[in-house]
Length: 461
Length: 102
Image 1 (cartoon, rainbow over the protein chains, first blue to last red):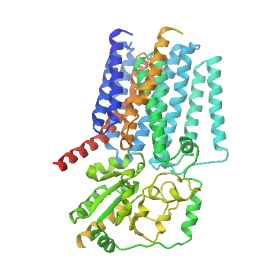
Image 2: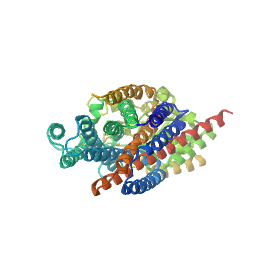
Image 3: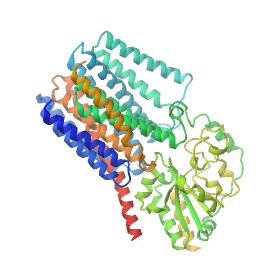
Image 4: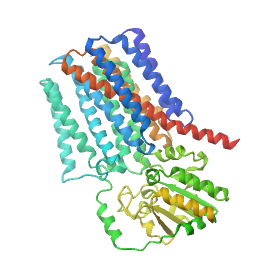
């Protein structure tokens, strides 16, 4: 590798680090993304002198870049903001797949008995990259609702997965110690793909962000391993940066949900309690509901209203309707703020993105810790399409799977208005006692329709 | 163990510490964009993909190279564009903030 190329890679690595640094503070975040992209462009240009083109090679690079560029741009431009999490899963998965394929190609290039220093990182990259690819595709399918979001479990599942993992480790040792032939790489890849699917199947849709973050870190490590195979400094540094920061981010995310990473990955969260929730619903406990007019009056004559938005708001595309309602109330002198739970939406920070898109003023968005003491002074808390994040079971019932998760203190408000489509439990599949609270008023319907009705009712009040 | 491998191991270990240190103070609201941004950075595998694709000389390596380049390019381009879309809205929010405070 020439001096110029190495220096260019060094510049790219510095830009990646600066980009990550900027991405972790609200002010510089957007510039951080540009900084990292600039690093990427430098790294790619610096690589060109390294290439020894065959005729076919030049053609497939051209074709591949054009196809990938179009797919990436169109996918990223067209995706609705609510579907961001699955889009990130998809982009992550293809990266993992690419890392595995690069390793395979390099092994084929080295022939039947590559040196250990080539074979080991390649095999690592094949396994981890394939797991990331398959796992991300399952995560995508779950979030896109192409398959059920609830955990899929079967007897001795973790044992089967453990055996699968052991089989892969055994296979890896055999490949490294005895024979490395193309057929063995293919088999290893297939085993790893199966493990990737099997690993994500028992994890519920609500936990997918944590899984995607983990698989993101996996892809980073697979890329770094490919870097060892190719002796490429840029791949090693960038891949490792992502592997390390992605691992920390995964931990921060599960912390925000008040759960351990092991519990997220192996707890089959939201599955066991589905039956219990349905049974409780059938007991026919009474809930209170009210007309739009009555609620409009209640809101219009309140002093303080807190809006607690959840994923249901996003699904109904009701961000603009909720902002309209809030503006109307503010004109009447009502103090309005939004209580943002750390995991509202389907990814930490997702709800901020969605509300920002609807031009909700930044000052009205309050983080959970900031607003939790203010609920007791609120006349009305309007829960729009949220459920688990206001479920008092997290505080009061140690048996509940969400026990210990920090929640919004919505139950302390004088009135709680729940806007929901039905009595169905939330994403985690747990019944919510707050729905039956005497202070609670249910307002059934699609969040957008309901909010529009409330807007009209407040205008009339 | 040759010198090149030793150097690579050094970069690897140092990059682990930098990666952890550099994002240690990220606020919750930026978790999603940060995840998406790091996702774009591991699209650097495109460098690896073009290296192996350039030398493709058999039907198998051509196929592998082509698929690897497509996947890696999708990762890079999609990753940066989707991150920018998210962060664009944060920028809008800060503008509305300054507007209101005036």
